[in-house]
Amino acid sequence: MNLPMSVPTDNVYKFVAIFGLVMVIASFLASIQQGVSTNEEVFSSAPEIAKLEASKNLDPYDKAKLEILHRKLEIALSDRKFLTWGGGIFGGMGLGISVLGFVAWYKKVQRHQDRLLELQVREAEKKDSEAIVGGSG
Image (cartoon, rainbow, N blue to C red; front, top):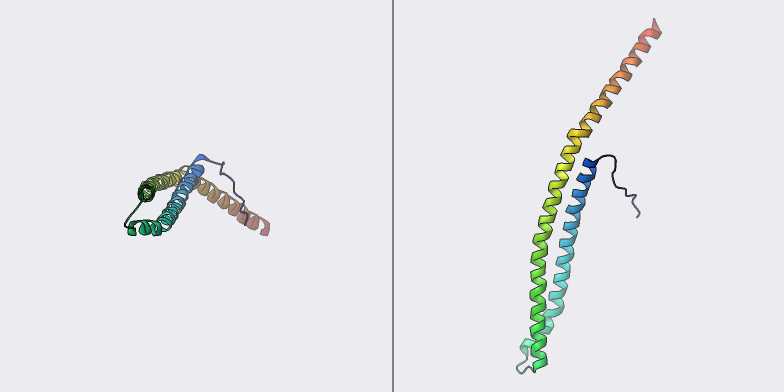
């Protein structure tokens, strides 16, 4: 499915609002990806760790391998924690930016455009009613 995507360039507030939403979505997707990646690492390493830990006599190679596997898990879990917090902060910033952008867009642009449209409609209705009254007499 190809969706036409274009950057809103008609005003900066709309751009800021949409950029903030993109930040929120990106942080959400990154958190999901990090969780999946960490889970894969845990599930792929766990059987091998259990096998090595069950062995009574480990040679130096197996001891090093076990240590490396434990360290890989430790790093994966640490990365998950860091990136979860980082993603939360990034997403929170995105939400704040988006809210500020939408509020500024509404206050500085949209409500004036709405008012202008309302005045144009009133003017058109006035002309129509004058034409009807003037044409029937």
